[in-house]
Image 1: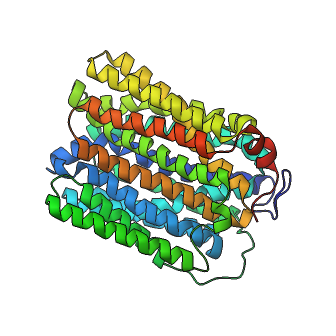
Image 2: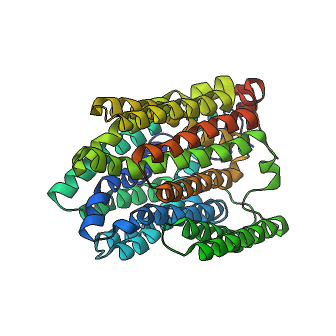
Amino acid sequence: METAGTLPWQAAAPGAGRRWATAAVLLGLVASAFETTVVTTAMPTITTELDGRALYAWVFTGFLLASTVGVLLGGRLADQLGRRSTFVAGMGTFLLGSVLCGFSTSVPMLVAFRLLQGLGAGVVQPTTLTISSDLYTLEERATIQSVFTGAWGLASVIGPVVGGLLTERLGWRSVFWVNVPVGLLAVALLWRSYRDPPRPERRRFELGGPALGALSIALVLLALEPAALPASASMAVLLAAAAVALAFLRQQRRSADPLVPPAVLRDRTVRASLVGGLVAGGVLYTLSAYVPLWMTSHLGQSALGAGVALVPLLTGWALGSSFGVKLLIRGGLRASAGLGFLIAGIGAALFGLALSQHAASGWLYASLGLLGVGLGPAASTCIIAPQARVRWEQRGTVTSAVYACRMLGGSLAIALVNLVGGSEPRQVLLVVAFAVGGALAIERLAPGAEAGGRTALVAPIIE
C-alpha cells in the first residue's frame, strides 16, 4: 500500500525512463485537451457547410456519450490488462476516429465518427491520469501537478486559436488531423519507457454494467433532444431510460466486481468527488461547446474570434489548477472544489449579464477568466483527492468513475442547454445553476479540513 514517500513498484526506470514516461503522459494530455478545444471553434463552420445546424449539439453529445463508455471500460481494462496496453488501444481508436471525422461528408456521418473518436478518448484520459499517479507519490504529485496543469492549459489555450486558424486557412477537416502525429509520438514514448504495475488475479470482465449505463444515458439524451420525438414518445423513452437505469443498479449490486467497489463509495471524499466531476463536466463542456456559438451569433465573431473567446476561460482554468492542490491539502474538497464552483458560478453570472447588456468584449473575456479560475481547482482536485484515498491498484477504477461522471455531466448539460434554447443569457443561467448547485453539494457531502485535508490524503486509505 502506498505511503507518502514510497511507491509499491517502479513504473519507469529512475531518471531518463521516468522523464520519457512523463513526456508520454503529457503528450496524451495535450492530445486530449487540444482535441476538446480545437474542434469547438470549427463547429459553426462545419455545421453550416454540411447543413447540419439541427445536429450541432449531437456532435458534442455523441462524443461525450461515447467517452463515458470508454471511461467506464478504460479504468477496468487498465487495472486488469495493464495501463500501457490500454493506453495504446485507446489512443489508436481515438486517432482512427479523428482521421475518419476529417473525411465526413455530412453531420450524421461526423456524429458517427465522433462516437468512435470519443470512445478512444474516453479510454485514454483516465488511463493517462492513472499512469501519472503510478509515476509519482502523493507529495510528488502535488509538485508535478503544476507541470501537468501547465501542459494541459497551454494546449487548451492555443487549441481554440489554432482551430480558428486551421479552419480559415486549411479548412475545417484539418482540425481533426492535427492530433495524429502527437498521439503516435505519445504511444511510442510510453511503450518504451513505462512498465505496468503488478496485476491481481484476472477476474471475469463484465460488459453488462457499462452497456446498461450507456444505454440509459443514451435514452435520456434522445428524449431531451428538441424535435427528435413527439411529446408522448419522449415520455416513453424517459420511462425506458428509468427502467434501464434500475436494471443497471441491480446488476451492480449483484456483480462480484462492480464498476466502483462499495467500500470506495462509502468514503465521503470519493462521493463528493463523483458529484464534483458531474458538475465540472456540465460547466466545462457546455461552455466549450456553446461559447464559440454564442460569440459568433451574438457578436458576429469569425471562427478565429470565437476561438479567442475561450482563451481567458482556459487560462483561468490553468491558473486556478496550479494552486488547487494546495487548497486541497490545507482545507480539503470544501476549500478547493466548493469554493471553486462558487467562483465559477459568479463568473458565469457575470458572463450572462454581459451578454444580456451587449457589453464590450473585454467584459465577456474577464468574466470567462474568473469562471476558469474557479473551475480549474474544483475539477482537478475532484480527481486528485479520490486517487489519494484508494489503494494504488484501485486508482484506474476510481479515476475512471470520476471521469465518467464528468462526461455524463457534460452530455446531460449540453442536452439541457439545447433543450432550453431561447436567448443566450437564458442558456447561461443554466450554467450558473450547475456551478452554484455544485458548490452547495460539495459543502454538504465533502469532509471538513480535519477529515479531508493533508492527514487524510497522505495516509492510507480505503481497504
